[in-house]
Length: 91
Image (cartoon, rainbow, N blue to C red):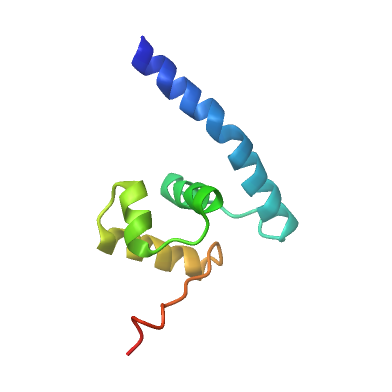
């Protein structure tokens, strides 16, 4: 039962962040969009941690860097996030 209670506690803890993000999406005029659970998770991590690298997001998401990069590309296209290439990575 402790594992189940832990899951319940984590879900309850996420609700305020989800409501905040939903309010921000609605206020921006993008409130009628559908997002996947992984996209929600990325938004939650960014809300909590601020700007992060693709590698850092991949670690939080427990996903590979390539899959995370593809997810972020889709989120950029949907205008959910803004992605910048650090000057040290630019050719």
